Image (cartoon, rainbow, N blue to C red; front, side):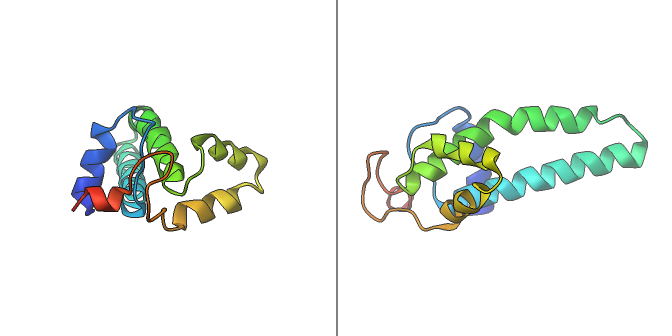
Length: 119
């Protein structure tokens, strides 16, 4: 999945917490959110504006971000609730590992392999 397909999927599955998302879909969505945040912050800093644009951008991507996190964890056969481990600080390490880990080749309880569906 390329960058534009990933961003399109990110917004088209705005609040879809079921199913699976591939690594490329997740990481391209993360890259898009980082570029969006940097661009909003740069624009605000350039014109001396209050951080209202950044806040609106963050609010616009909050629900789809949680949704793609859950779908990415589903791809590694984990419940989306495992993301709550990040609040323990030490839990960031296994969650980051799961985000980087290849998804299950076969179908799992959360659906079929997203890499097979995109072909």
